[in-house]
Amino acid sequence: MGPGLEHGDYVIVNRWAYRTRDPAVGDLVVLADPQREGRFLCKRIDAVTGVGSYLVRGDNAAISRDSGSFGPIPRDLIVGRVWLSVRGRPKRRDGTPQSPP
Image (tube, rainbow, N blue to C red; front, side, top):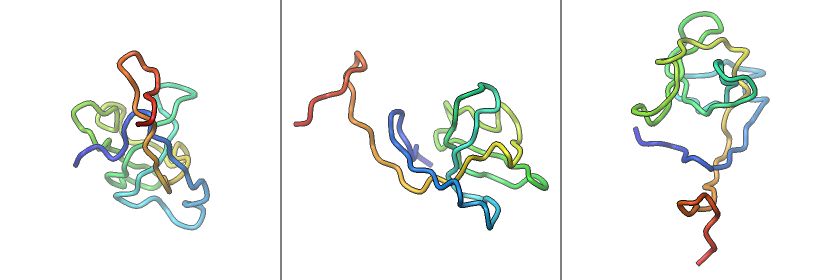
């Protein structure tokens, strides 16, 4: 599977999505980074490993930090489901935004 999101993309997260149901395999979710406090990750639910525990995978497996590196995550780290994503503005090599054509 190719990357669903690119660095710099914007996402709208439905924080209420899992109030009435549990995350399902294939859902794209935002979760609190279990290794770096104050940071968030966008990952896909890969499997349910137990009551309230999930394996998450990045769409770009070659470079992704996911359950392959930090193991299963508890349900309480999941912030919500990605509802909408929008491509960010392309950037130059120096990191500044490109002007529209």
